[in-house]
Image (spheres, rainbow, N blue to C red):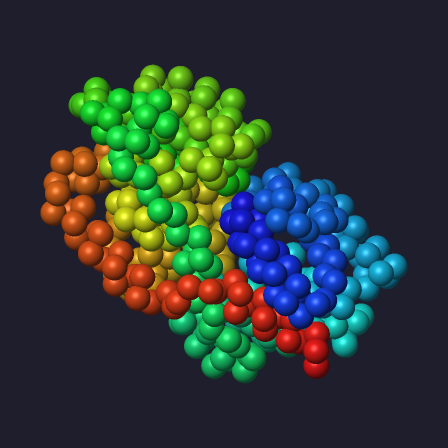
Amino acid sequence: MSGDLQGSFLVKALKEEAAKRSITLDLIALGGERMQAAGAKLLANTSSIGAIGFWEALPFVMPTLRAQAAVNELLVKDPPDALVLIDYMGPNIRLGNKVKKALPNIPITYYIAPQEWAWRIGDGGTTDLIGFTDKILAIFQEEAEFYSSKGGNVSWVGHPMLDNLKKLPPREEACAKLGIDSSNKVLLVLPASRSQELKYILPTLAEAAALLQKLDPSIFVLVPAGMASFEKEIQRILTDHGVNGKVIPSSEVDALKPSLFSVANIALCKSGTINMELALHNVPQIVGYKVSRVTAFIAKYLLKFQVDHISPVNLLLKDRLVPELVQDLFTANSIYESSISLLYDNKACSDIINGYKKLRDTLGEEGVTNRAAIQILDLLDK
């Protein structure tokens, strides 16, 4: 989902920059509806393909292989003039290696590279990435420093969310647009861009929300659906837990985001790009994540996976600004306790908002996707 979103921003910027250079650009992509709406031709829709973990990835093996087959056919029949990889580490590393070997003259750019600078899990992917890329466009300064230290040709362009900050409407106006009472405290629940997250994350968030509503019936829950296919399952989980709330259809989420951010007192969310978006719009948040026990065991004991923070907000600040609850600590009671602090302690919220201001200073300047597009097209001129 975040790859499709960031890809859509880049597609728009590439088309704008190409028009300035009088270049006719044919953009063929693996992505989703957002990239398609921005002007890319989808070779395969991959928005529903994605998982964190080993056991969780099994259902997506065949869809991934079909998408890869479509790419392989294109590379033979109509090779591109350039390749841009966005996020999505495993498949993109394999694709980058394949293209560099088969078509060595095609410039390869990696935009939003894997966060190996934040993980302690070995340098295998980094070595491959450095080997096949002509340019790495880093969105974090520490990311740029890491890949540069490994020998990569890196430019720090800044974080693309800076180009898409929303002007938030007044709270009463936003409440009216969403059809809720302005006297309500609003809990914004953002659980899932992957189907596995509905299973492992939303039920616990819903249980915590029900506990909070039992304490304070004025609390109302809003849950934006990450995909249309999630909507019924989200509603079922809310109903099963007795949560008083509303599911925002995925088709309306982008347009309603400014209103959602305006009305939210706090957000309960998974880790990921959404953490940055909430931070840039000054919404206090509690971050959580959980995977299957099998995946957790493999990551901890076999791969020796370690990370100081799961939220990019805390990762960049090198501090636990927003609460993080991972795996066994991700429980309804722990979320409930953290939520009470933010809902009823103005100082706790103020501390987070002040921390967000420091975060903003680390992200660069606006014009991120335009800078990325310029560097991608410059490679075509060489």
